[in-house]
Length: 397
Image 1 (cartoon, rainbow, N blue to C red):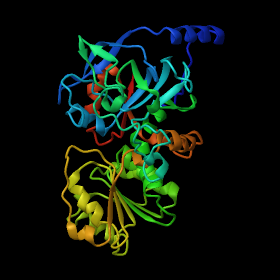
Image 2 (image 1 turned 60 degrees about the vertical axis):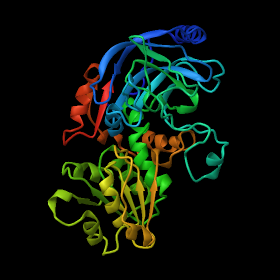
Image 3 (image 1 turned 30 degrees about the vertical axis):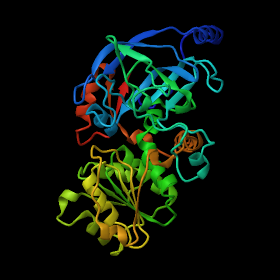
Image 4 (image 1 turned 45 degrees about the horizontal axis):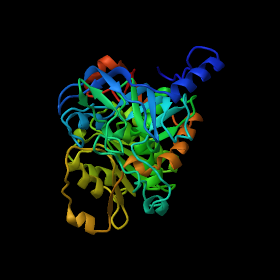
């Protein structure tokens, strides 16, 4: 699967076109396989499920590949979506449209797409503000259902829920078109799945959310897929000092591959991380710091590692805790703290910039892919993530 682009189906172009047209005009319920998690903390189980045809404004898609990230571990443990029976799914994937619902005019059967758990209407107050990527009209789906409050999937007579509205550990699924982005089919499938969430979250945080300036200093806490994306975004933006922090020493080489200039392993010394960062920056701290792990006790260190008066810290990692405790004095001395989803990237407006850089090989996403598993081995992927050499696991459907 590494580096492979979308492969068209067999048959002449005319035969494919006629078949696609007929299927798109009269889609039926599809029975297929999916990895289902029936309760918080339970392992995923491959089940036979039913997937309904798309309704108005929706598309049904065939999964080409998916990948696993830290958010999927959180979801499997019941946060933030906690229905009794739900499918615990990766939000990184690449799919081909199998059929379209009524009123869909901007997408066609056979288009290759990636999900966007954020929508973008381009007309609401937030979309027009230029200050956020959180659309009022199409918010982040947190209830596991489609925008109309229903599900398109069932297993064993029970309703299945989608993580953030875009389930991916299934051979087929239904998505609202406002949460879909069409991509160039020449983009390698693995790269497409990485761009759909984790990597873009980090890249966007430095490039779009923080707007890191040329010559800036940056600290990135956690060198997983999100953190490495933040390192790459800082490099592309012209940062001259990019400090990566991770307790896994094997991440040093990965960070350097994406542009990291300095590496800190917190377990190799007794000083607080913020103090080590200040030692590397002439005692001042960095201009920008990014928390990419979701480990809330780190937030104070992230904030403390920035410059007094103008330092900016960003929380972009998903975590289990719903609250965080802050040092009031650290915040009072002119530093700022901001949260960000998907790195501030607007899916339909901004994602093309990241994809274009990948197509031009200005970003080397091959460095992210370390392991591959089949759908039947999806539980193995959770164990692989614990391995020190693991960055990204690709799930081949």
